[in-house]
Image (cartoon, rainbow over all chains, first blue to last red; front, side, top):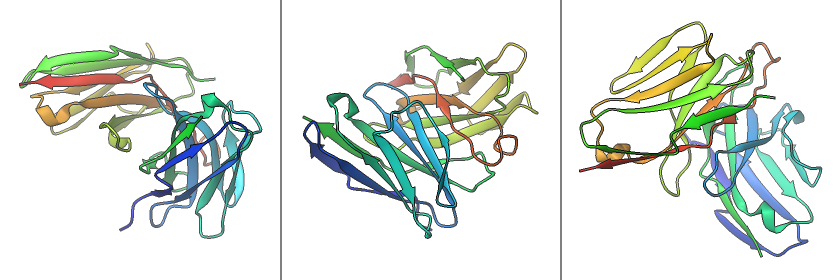
Length: 112
Length: 117
């Protein structure tokens, strides 16, 4: 039973660039949530996707956007990168209607 | 929106002792409270959760208590072992069935637990 997977593991970008992060949910899960975890902090909710639509969104600017594909996998896109976007980006999957969320290993993004 | 506070930020105990981590939340609509363990460089792992219709839940050495009136919940680890050393996060969210199916977790700032030999 495959767990949540994310790619890439690490990424280095420069300010102003754009980045795309990818997530494959746990087998059987249909809902994907994205979180940003700054160093020494708890994860902060970015948004959640179900049925290829954004269902909920946290307090993040429009530079952060996402997509969900028919196979339930998801992408997180960040445009016009800022130094403050440097963080661990976590993907969590769940069944829609279930409370339990299971996290992937994350993508460490460094913006120089 | 929901705000979750977590204390202490660091906790050091001797092996075999108990550890307690406390969280408070602000949104009375929250009724699902999970706890995650995150080892250095690894993903957060769900270790236990509790819903508002129960006051306590136990799983081997780990227990969680909830006081909805006071809006606080706690994680209790007994007979601590070196492998319990990690960062622990509490979180809160309204039940997904009440939000139309989706839910977002609001996390505390984490507690670095160190179990010393």
